[in-house]
Length: 62
Image (cartoon, helix red, strand yellow):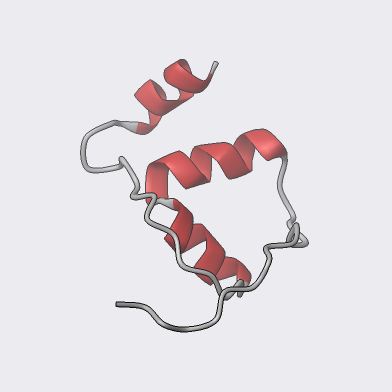
């Protein structure tokens, strides 16, 4: 069980559009994206790259 203190998430400084960020969240999972941004937070949202090709993710998000 995770007992680390939670902090309120603030919007990280990103170098991509919201559409690119959303695609990245869906493809790789929120935790992987947050880790790359250096945000210390726990997320249970897994990515779907094992089950959906990038083109299918784009279609779903369109």
